[in-house]
Length: 144
Image (cartoon, rainbow, N blue to C red; front, side, top):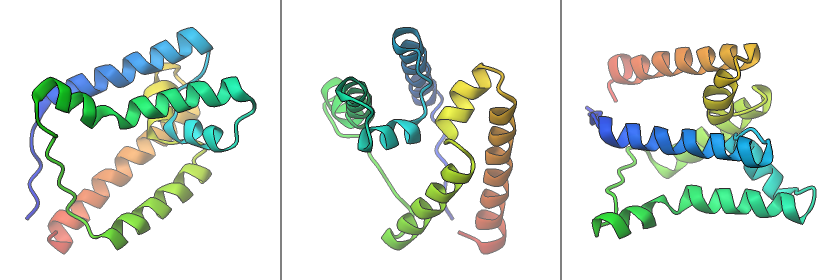
């Protein structure tokens, strides 16, 4: 059975950094931070300035393990309890959901909720409800 590790300090730190990045992006460029929109705009930028801030934010997102290594002297332990094919299928499902949901969890859940966007509130409630059902089915019905 898969065990979920309780990491309140790491979770608080990660959430604070995401919130800080969202606030800084809004304060400096007037842009809402949604990871999917940032990556999409990186592949189809409106201009060089648009590409630059998106690339810098994406580089910051993926450089977390290197920062952890510098601070702690070791790489973070990462365990992925799914096969490569399951990760690919999950990625495709998320991509479809992001398209139909007009954004991702970071855009709706962090920024949209903070702006009291009705669309984001409904999207976030849908994400959370679906997550709860998925966890229940996988852990209690399937036995994963």
